[in-house]
Structures are given as C-alpha cells and as structure tokens.
Image 1: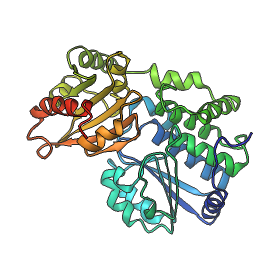
Image 2: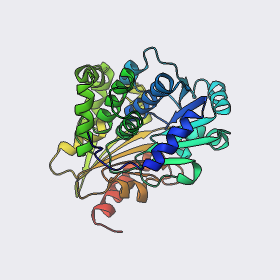
Image 3: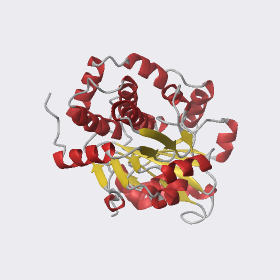
Length: 349
C-alpha cells in the first residue's frame, strides 16, 4: 500500500545506515511516560534487536501507570528514578541514542543533564510535538500532523522493512497501544493515516480487544472513587466554558493513586456541551502539573504556553504552575484559575 504521507527517502536511508553501523542503542522516553511513550519505546527495542541485531536498552525516567503493566511483562527496561546508576551506564555505553515522544531533552526532566552529556556517536529523535530541538540530534523525524509517536514510528519501521509483515509481534501490539492511548481510543487527533495503521495492525493479528480490556477495564477501585469525588465536588466550570479540576495533596492522601491513574480525567468535562476547555491540576512538591484539553476552535497549546509554562498540541497540552513563583502558595491556585479562565476566554492576547 502507498504511504499515507511523504517520508523523506534521504532521512530513511540515513537512519538505516546509522542503525546498521551501531552495536548498542539506548532508547529514552519522556518523564511520566504514557502509553505512546512506552509503546513506541518497546516497539523500537524489539525491532532493533529482532530485525537488526542491535543490542537495545529502554530507559523510562520514572514510574509507569499500572494500566500499562501488561506491556512490560517479560520486558527488560530501566526505571531511572529507581536505578539512576544503571540508567547512567546505559547512556555512557551506547553508540546510538534514540529519543522518542519528546521534543527536547528537557522533557526527560531529571535525565536532561545525562542526555545532554551522552557520548553516543549518533542521536536520533522521533516525535510528534511542536518545536523540536533538532540541533541536538544527528537526525530528527518530527511531524505534528499525526496521531502519536507510535504511529509515526510505525510508518518509519514499515518503510524500513518494506511492509508491516516483518515487524515483530510485540512491536505491533505496543504500537497499537500507544496510538490508542494518544488518540483517547480514536476520540481525538485521528488522521486518515491513523485508521490505515489500525487496519494494518488488525490484519497483522493484533488483538485490539485485549489492548482495550487492559487499558480501560482494569482500573483500581480507588481510581473510580477518586474520579467520582473530583467530578462531583472538585469540578468548577468558569464563565466561557473553562472546566477546572484540582487534586490537592490533601485529596491525594485520601485517594492514593499510582502514577498515571489520573490519565483520561481531563477529557471527561469536554462531554459537557458548554465546556470549551478542560484543565486538570495535580499538586506536586513545588508545583501543580497541568493537563489541558480543548474543543476545536480553542487552543490548549496557547493556554499552556501563556499561563502554565508549557505547550503541546492545539487540542492537547500540558505545563506546570509553580509555587512560589506563578502563585504564592497552593491555596492561591483557585483564584489564579478563575482569573486565567476569564482572560483567556475573552481572547485577551
């Protein structure tokens, strides 16, 4: 089948040469890894080892959501948060560094310095976010008009193999998982190429029902009760249609959730007709981590960039709100959100 979009033959050939001349690869994804980061990372590791004979290690910066545990069954990987020495060793010893699902080393947060100092001869980026730091890499594949890094990687690997038939089974399963999570199960960021990818993965035998059951039907009881509490008493809808949910430290002590278990919460208020943007803020040590989603015509990226030290896609973005700094203390978050919502919805640019 013809490729759904143009992939530079020069870049593909260069990537092929880089991989064939490498003996040890290290793959790194962004902090707080989601399904797209983990899916693309696992898929690439399997392909490198099984199809190219390259020893490959996968580093994740910190803990994963429990719903992604099924992808890690039998998988070797390094959690840099729990084993920083092993992660540093993998970065020192590789001759090929592959960075997935982040536009710059800074998105790996605590690993940023080690990535910048990594002595690897070749550094390759594969990503779908805005403003990639291409100067930090030997070769950069960056495309925003695509559902996910998992989808982008699928078409790259397919091009290298001349079809999907030769791709490892675990790679295909991981790529289906990554694409499914980043599109919110085909709820957003879907392109014709996304549906073609899904069709080919189904033809290749990927069990999508299994993926869906592990992603969306294996939650903890605490997660469901926490969502009910946040949506019941914790949801505020400001004039103009900005929905805000805040998970304070006090709330998190009452409802102890694992990393990633709040995934998907920010999308729910968009089901309300009058809501145009949805924000979810989770308090951490010295900041709130902010997730933003929007309906068409309202820019989540613009709001994240202007008010939350972040950015992302037009309808899905994120950032941070620091205290002290942006606000004096955590208690001031509610006033800041009310003011920010009013300014943004008035198009006060």
